[in-house]
Image 1: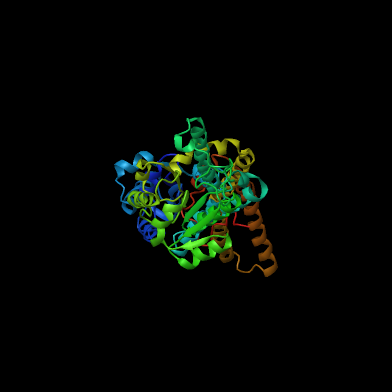
Image 2: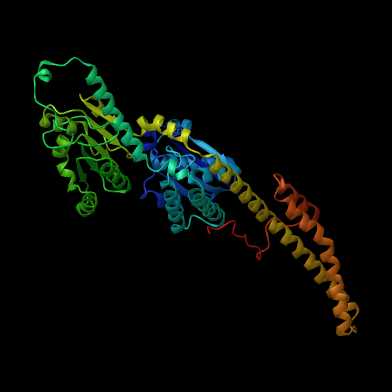
Length: 474
């Protein structure tokens, strides 16, 4: 058996393709069960987030495992193999360990250092456990990965570099307004704008002209509509309030949850049927609902814009996967859509400034330690089989000797038996200790194979052999 991961991520696929290849929580149990029906797959874990869809597996053979996992991805997502295969990556054995440890530490996220991935990996592992799809091999791998992720968060500052994708999105929205304000400043004044109107009130105060640009880097005077009251909506509400938003409105399918979030941040809550009216008033819309279809269509936005009259520009920040906001809103005048694809470059710049070398060193050390333990675990059945075989030989020879020397008293018999066992133990001590030491080397498996060939040991370990736990979460 060997480790395998097959998947696609933000590094290999667009947001649209990730949407198509996503495996929903409801689909995970059947996906796991179907995988385990194959003779190729002994264990499996499905990890599907906004940045990636991956299947980790313990497989009988590399090529057979890849074929089975990719076929299953095609079946569950409905994406044809011709579309899916160019975006897939495949990792095997040691590379699987390094990949998962990097993922759980946030090194492979769109926003390097983001901490949500740790909880997502934990949830994926628990889902596999609940379905009986994770056993000794993936159990050891994922338990160790979760411990490594906790170490990265507690012992380094990588989490500070990726505190929230919401923050990056809000900065992108602010940049849109700053650019518009700069452009308006360069344009010649229209007759209407040149008419004396008295001193302008500060943005956000009574008397301020609707849409007056706030101070750079803030949401002062802005009306923010947050669609969805989950983890992203909660972060968006907190950051919008901290940035000085004039009004925060929470639109959520579940009224009670939306009301609690609104009350916590001094806003008000509405239901999704009231979206059109709220879109007519909003200047920034942050959406992340987890819905499987579009929540905000181009037609809905067009109707809201028509009802609002000549309002300033409207910015959508769509952080959902699958997407919440119809890409067609980009065609509407005065509307700007910022989605996960738009943020890729900004997120890459964030990663460039993050101090991630310490985490990379941590991951490299943990990968090496895990592989050493894995190799040692693989050679353990061979060592136990050798000792079991030697014990059987001693037993047979003692039985023969007992028939030849039936009159030997108990004391002398004990001395003979003890001497034979000591001779065998001493002969086996050096090779068994040495093969365990050599097992941690890159070609450690070859030494165990040589031992099996030399002593004609069975390929299957004795029933008493059980695999040790390789680094459980502590």
